[in-house]
Amino acid sequence: MKLGVVIPAAGSGKRFGSTLPKQFQPLNGVPLLVHAIRVFEDSSFNCSVVLAVHPDYKMTVQNMVMRYNLTCVSALVDGGAERSESIDNALCDPSLRSCQLIAVHDAVRPFHTEELLERLVRTAEQFGAAVPCVPLSDTIKVVRNYTVVETVPRTDLRAIQTPQVFNAQLLRSCYESLGELDGSITDDASVLELCGKSVYTVDGLTENIKITTQQDFAFAQFLLHKEDY
Ligand code: C5P
Image (cartoon, rainbow, N blue to C red; front, side, top):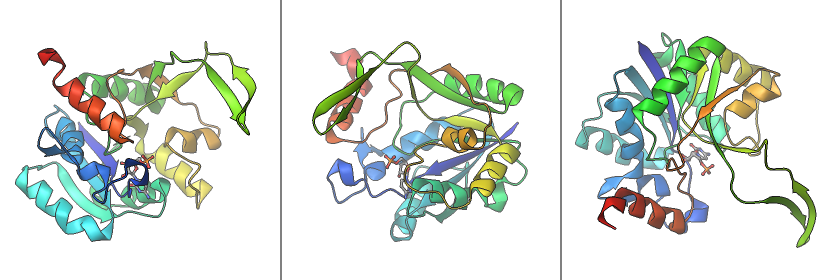
């Protein structure tokens, strides 16, 4: 089965506090973006991967794709000012035209697995949209002006990860019908939700962390070497 994959990798990584955007930081000597692509490259799906990158880093990424022999990468497109714009650009790429399902995966999550991908694909084939989720362990409160406004009951709360897998037509039509999106949209399931479409969940992986800060990066290094501890 041919699986379309969109990887938004055009962020500047302001919260990471480094001149090199976090998706290019080496983890065990290999850029995070390459870790993210590798699972698709090595999977039993026939993946066609479109990367959305900032024009300034196009050459860097082209070199990475060659150096790590990432044959599943079918195109590089320009990223946009917001993540949703980067996705929108990638969805238009002709190399995804024949894909019935599209997985969207953040470049800064290096620990997804083929088993998780299979679970998501099976669910998306049946229901049109599937996302991985994990329960929360902290107590969640709404805070304004340094003051607790409300405690949100935790039972129904989940943290949502990527990859998120969608019926390609459904995902495209939702992006098209919403038009220009602002930075408040932080994942693709939200685009479907805004269009009134159902999104199904599967069990995610606690180690499938999103690397946002230097602390996340240190934790990722620990996860890679945890058997040495
Ligand atoms: O900023 P955030 O951590 O939410 O970014 C999630 C993913 O979206 C990252 O892989 C980042 O490179 C990507 N992104 C993008 N275009 C933007 C902003 C973020 O492709 N304008």
